[in-house]
Image 1 (cartoon, rainbow, N blue to C red):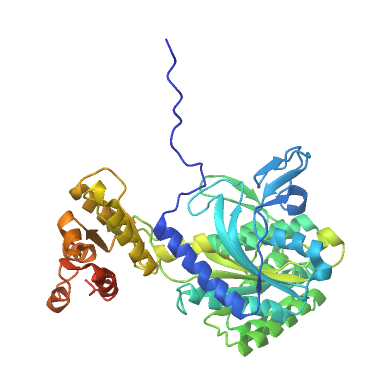
Image 2 (cartoon, rainbow, N blue to C red; image 1 turned 30 degrees about the vertical axis):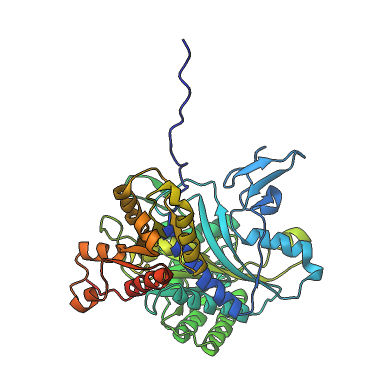
Length: 494
């Protein structure tokens, strides 16, 4: 007896999502809007490959024979390991190091595309997602950081947010470094523990962070997290530092008092003052960008100013429950990344949009574009002998810039109409033998049918302008369908 053939279960891998037209359209709209902002600021588009050599990525490499912790890696036939890029910045560093002599410097580039992270997936956290970055490599001036912040604000608004819907929070890693040096904290592991504690301020509050700065904290489940091991005075100094945020000018004044004579901290305050001046020059208000000493990004990755874009508007999930998306973009100064390849200090700064995350946040906030992904006009097939006429009609519509298709299934008239409706077609073109003989077409206004069925259109004048079905001369088909599409664009609100 023969064994039954194997049938795999149809399932998407964890952390990877299928996207249909509406979601893809939302992401492409964001990419187009943000890319235009980057181009207006004079940034050059660059696309690097999906794979990089694993040793060039650097960030996630473990102490093992197979370098795939945090990244998806494979071994090439020359026995070199390469991995899917986990962001767009590490490939930029490799590109700059490889082409530095031929680049106009500072090198200003933007890029967008998918990135992959071999991490545990969760709500809103995927293993593949879209980023859109801009970076300046070769400028140490704080004004280059200010430009990133200004572009971040402009990009968020171009993507569909309004002022007040978001806030860019700005900090400088030199400030906390200087404060800890003054407090006598020199151990790198202890400094990292402080950064991790501060990073949890929004979630745990001051009291929770105080415990993590000290001996540690036990959560609701009873699990204990070891703290940074600071003592009383140092703990209070850090807490005072992270709570000085206010207006940009007021924060600078308060920081000067809190830092307490640290040379590195003073440089950090000076850099923030230069950023503030540049932001004022670019018209970035305090309702768009503020200084916030509690912002921590990348822990060991960033070397100076850091910034994070947070949504400020209420959001709900599919069940109507409140959700918090937190950061939808951010960046900062990373002066050590190119030096991994060259050994030479190379200043760099950048900003990255989490496009997939921003699109999801806009949907949760009810601010995603309301239009559904439109389907094509569907030409109904009555008779196989007339298929030439059907394809000629579809070709004429396409030539006029109207998406269209000939139904290529095997169903009858009623299922074809249902198919057209499911495709969100604005109209169906009906050409029976009699219509073809008379040089006519019948057009069914599917948009009107959907509007009436959902009780959208109580406006009698609007209804009178749009008969549900019409027969027109063949040479008027394009104009009639264009009128349907135009009328739908000004459809009355419910």
